[in-house]
Amino acid sequence: MTKRQTVTATASITWKDSGVPVADRFDDPYFSLEDGLSETRHVFIDGNDLPARFLPDFHIAELGFGTGLNMLAAFLAWRDAGSPAGVRFTSFEAFPMEASDIERALQAFPEAHAVAGPFLTAWNEGARRFDLDGFTVEVVEGDARETLAVWDGKADAWFLDGFSPAKNPELWGEALMGAVGAHTAPDGTFATYTAAGFVRRALDAAGFDVERVPGYGRKRHMSRGQLRP
Image (cartoon, rainbow, N blue to C red; front, side):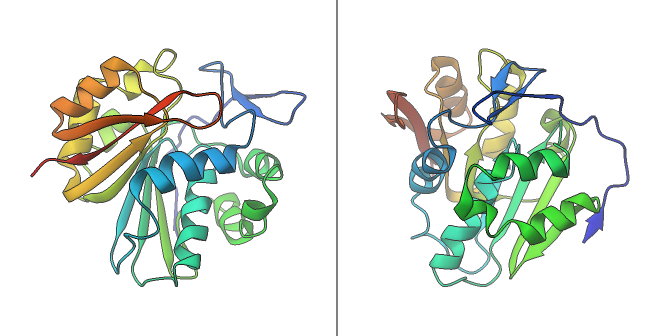
């Protein structure tokens, strides 16, 4: 496990009566007010055709780690697919949550919370790289506009899960989406809950064939796509 070497601003959170954490900086909830785990599975797991694509050394990358719910959903999908060796998950997060807040948020999702113990222990100890039964996770702290540019990896699947583009536009700009495209493996994919036109255009400019498909619950549309040859 790798511990933090630099100081990063942590997330400032307000809790709704429903138990949903809201990021004060962006005035946006961390997950669906309906069922965040089901939304994660619809948008990011199904949106990237997982777990069918899991092969040894498959690499998932994410913008916006938040509560770690997407990571745990990917871990569960990987485990249910037979735990192919070498699957990795890398996430970029500017304002990491405290372990106590993550643990509180995950209580809303018993299935995810049940497997979160090793992650929460590592996180509380300051580790940002840890192993969950062979599923390797690394969280890169800092502004993704800077950290992604110097990342030496390429993802087979992207989870684009920043806060609302209307409230956090810097995480959806053309330059950052271009960096996502540049750090995508051949035939790699992305999925995101948003269907905002400027986001889809930025992803198209980044080299993806972008499609708008049905969203989760009350959200009519989401976006997904594959890197063009």
